[in-house]
Image 1 (cartoon, one colour):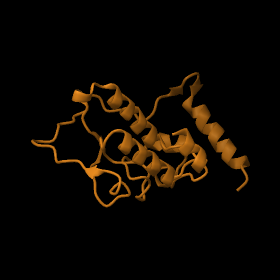
Image 2 (cartoon, one colour):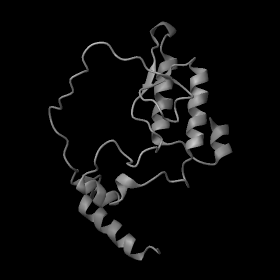
Image 3 (cartoon, helix red, strand yellow):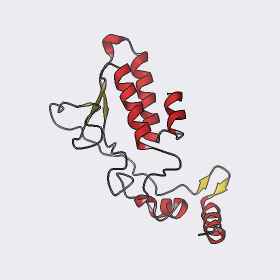
Length: 157
């Protein structure tokens, strides 16, 4: 992994780190209990929106109004690095990775997951999430928003 990161001189994306954690759990399990690791919703910035959800007003105010439409930050990440990591993981897990959609960059690395039998699971949240917490540690969110706004004013274009 470190050799790939050094070769591309970039860091893996958050989803790839999550996949590595899942693979660690997969490999730690007894072989007779290991199932597939199914990747759902990983498009590697192949779509126009960054997230599968609409960012809230407060989230965009704190992290930037272009948050949903930012593309990959190529100074930090490289899709080819993440693809190489996934291919390596696929080889070391004997093909444990499966995908849920077709026509993506993942097609040549992993097989399509079989359709799940029966009805889909019912997901009804009992408590809807709040838009945003009022505090982040010892700092009020309003202060962080104001600091972000001030930084945008003095940052060169």
